[in-house]
Length: 198
Image 1 (tube, helix red, strand yellow):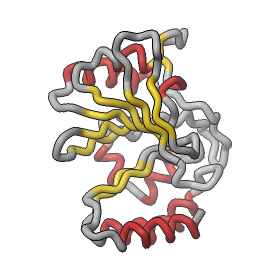
Image 2 (cartoon, one colour; image 1 turned 90 degrees about the vertical axis):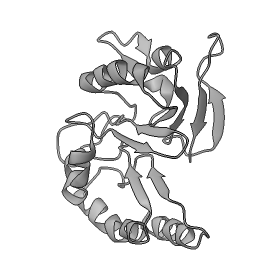
Image 3 (cartoon, rainbow, N blue to C red; image 1 turned 45 degrees about the vertical axis):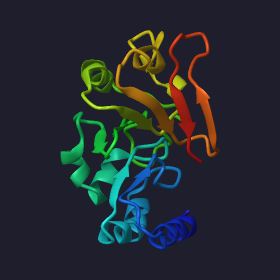
């Protein structure tokens, strides 16, 4: 992973012009989200920041928040939901709302569940804030849209809600390690463009 991170950072820094933003859709760490993973990747990612690129990092199933925040403490101030790492990046034409879909086990070095989840506080924030979001926006997260369920019974999905958010333009996620673009539900009269990043 370190080799490919260095290669990707070098490729970004060769771009002309440089991008203004770089987004990491989770799984910055290797397997179990150990502190050493974040410490090792930090100098490479700092090169992007030093070049004037704004970096936004999301949480994936191989991450652990406590270890991540030891190396990236600014995310504790940047988050919109305490106990999670939700961020908003304002771009010229739209905002990117990066949700924290990490379903974390508390133990250090624990293997987290592969499937994603939104905490109750995160679900409440989504339902209270995103229906009235004032600008066009995309939702980003590590996990696919169909994994993020709402309510104690898990019968409602994120898609069931965001198709009704007037300014939502689509959903972008990582996790699946391949490029694809799809819609979340063919039966709905309104669908959500859905992009998977490798």
